[in-house]
Length: 172
Image (cartoon, rainbow, N blue to C red; front, side, top):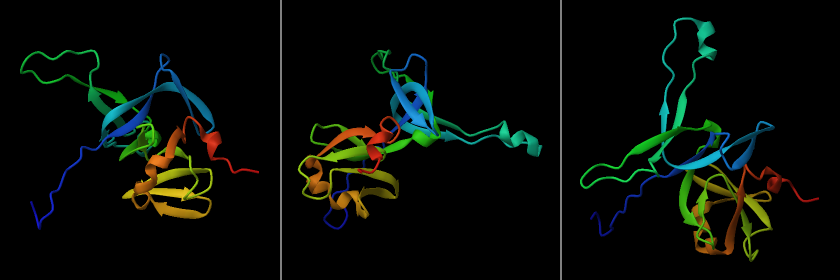
C-alpha cells in the first residue's frame, strides 16, 4: 500500500485475427476479405532476424502472436497449463480496455459501439486505436474513454473496424 491507495495490477489482454480456412469469421483488411478467427490472450512479437543483403529485407518480416491456454488440454495435478500460440495479422491486434458494455461484452480498442440512450453523443461512434489510453470519437468530438466510463453501460458493442467497417460510414 502506497500513500493510502491500494494498487491493483491488471493482466493485459489482447485479441488478434489469425487466418484459417476453418475460421467462422470474415474480416476486411485493405479491401480484401480474409477468413479466420479471433483469439484472445497475451501479445508477443518476434522481430525479424538480421539480413545481410538489402534484397532480403522484403522476405523477412516480424512475427506477431497471441499466446493463450490450449482449450483442448486438461492439466494434471501440479502441472502447468499448456499454452499455444496463433500467428495473427499485426494490424488486427487490439488491447482490451478493461471495460464491458451493457451486455458484458469486452470492449477492445477496435470496437464499434452503439449509444443506446444517446445522452452523450450521436448514434454511432467508434473507439480509435489508443496512444496510451483509448479514445472515443463522436462526430468531430474526441473523448478519452475513461472520461465516459460512468456511462459505459449505455453502450453496446455492435462490431469492430475489421468485421463491420460499414458501420463507420457517415450517415447521409
